Length: 459
Image 1 (cartoon, rainbow, N blue to C red):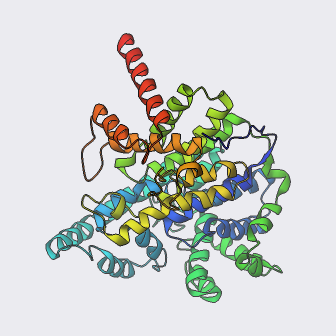
Image 2: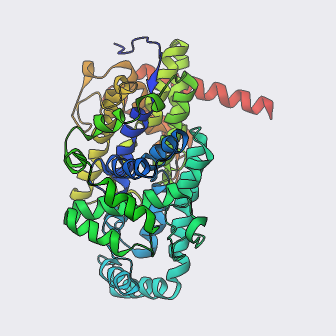
Image 3: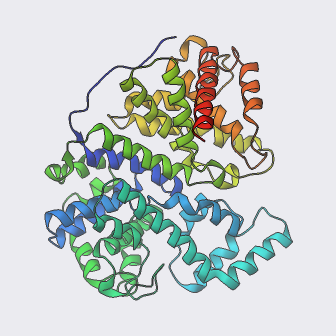
């Protein structure tokens, strides 16, 4: 079997570029056009410059803007179950609601349970109307706390964590989850929310409509001083041209080159990969911890095949990040208990390619992109998304495929209970040669049984 691994050493990495490019994955789950977090970072960073923030505050603002949606996947399943709707489209469209109660109610009526039966829709609407305040608070609190926790694991400062945690607080105290008011709201949070609203409305309705929208919310959602700073910042030459241009990414990273380029060791890179794998797994209770388990099974196979330690570490990152593209899949599909429609299968089959697209943009992860993108291919060419077969499937893809299917079969899914391990291996062995590589299946079985034996002895 051919291997595509090439040993390399990480010297330095531009942390801003790494985090910025990974933010494209966060755009997927919020239903925003590609580059939303990047555009928010451009807008918010210019507000920060106008306010003359010090270097540390500027750097923290930069990262809070890029990572504001870190917790966005954690409330997706709950949102789907409450509103009986597509979480991605719901989140996308809700951001254009003007903030008034009447508009919010109209939105809820227009979105809730459209594909459900009448009685089911009525029950959902009654629940939302009666308990709407608490339900929305729960959704926002889940998102904000999860995002702040992940930022902490990624070694970002408390100011970045607090900026993410208070993203949905409003200047007049009408926000959530804590109804903070005025100066009790971190400046970074209010800038991030302003940048978010500005980008959403500018993208949907144009520049003038967006400026009017944020100005109308001055003193309500936003600190009037931030509105004044934005209005001044957006006058800068090239501000709007760069925001709408294809080279926004490079302009953004060039703004503060000395602040955002730093040595990143292998351990830190692993932590960042693991953090983003947790963002993916938070989408659904049925895939909770899926990436970690697939990473474990991948490493069991790699160890049995006697891969070197650095090779195994590299492959573990591919396993951690293989499902990034699932952030673009609605929980209406991921958690569906029945058979998927043809259109739903098209969406499901798109996720490996999306994973590959995101990873290809990141120099330090570009060499695992093709591995992640091929984890649903089969030896007989009947897999997806590209129908690769036989020799086209390298050793690493073969390992990851077996690990992924092993976890999918041995874990509970919305359409069936978890299968016994013996049954899982029976299925894998039956499809050796057509779907799975014989050595990889044998390696997983040997390694799994060995670990189980050790666990029984220890117990």
